[in-house]
Image 1: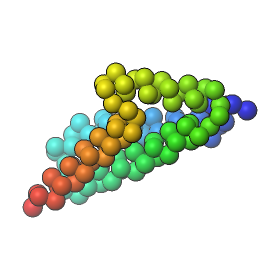
Image 2 (image 1 turned 60 degrees about the horizontal axis):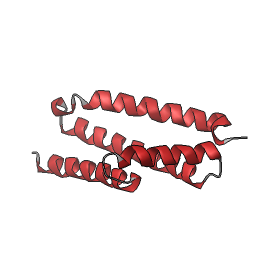
Image 3 (image 1 turned 120 degrees about the vertical axis):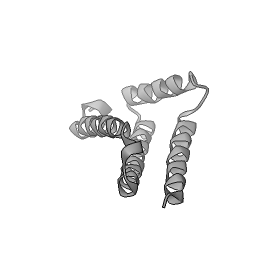
Image 4 (image 1 turned 45 degrees about the vertical axis):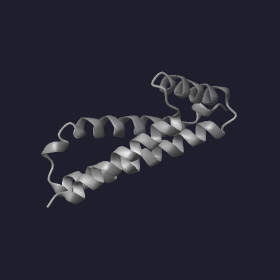
Length: 107
């Protein structure tokens, strides 16, 4: 059975994509959120990034050809911006940490 043949993998990929799309859409109103709303958004984004990081690690550890191709595609895509996948995750974490710091400064 290939990596992508797994119903669990397909379901998690679908759920990650849907959750990401919903958070990005919601994030468009981030500036209008009250303090608790911003905190909740940041928490949800952190949880999503952790799920994504684990999902990608499963790809990296798999010996399945299609899983390895997916990892290579990600590397190619982010390299167009002059970064590695790890730098992409680091930048996302940095942004979330900055958002939390800004939130702590608010009364």
